Image (cartoon, rainbow, N blue to C red; front, side, top):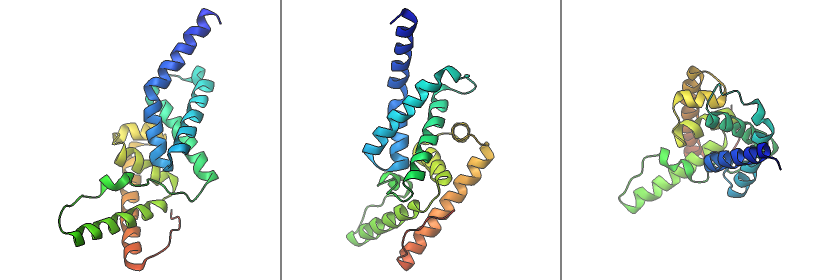
Length: 182
């Protein structure tokens, strides 16, 4: 290995150390499986290595890598359409309450309905909820990662949250099954 190849290996190792945890967390939130997130994280970095020479620095390295992760996640989603997504990770979007056992049981049921409702979102809405709601990226960062405008991020996030609430309420009231919605 010559000096240039050695330096390239060090660069790739540094990139991996810097961004692998964040990529893993993003994929875990999207997929809901630790094993799948680990495998997909490796896939992301294989793609990063293959296309690193094309990185044009029009965005940050982080944004570019998460954009690749988004595509890997959507590819996986297409392979396995109905999976358990966000197993417990979106609970922080619901207000936590402390109090009577009856209230706690009701809250737990509502969270379950909320999680079931999330299963029904298409990837574009799931992505915006993961990035804005869970990872708490700014609108600008989310737009860069998703490759869309800031206005689209705002609209999609609003629509996704509205859909989740409506479907969760429907599941709660009717005990409905899980079907994907657009």
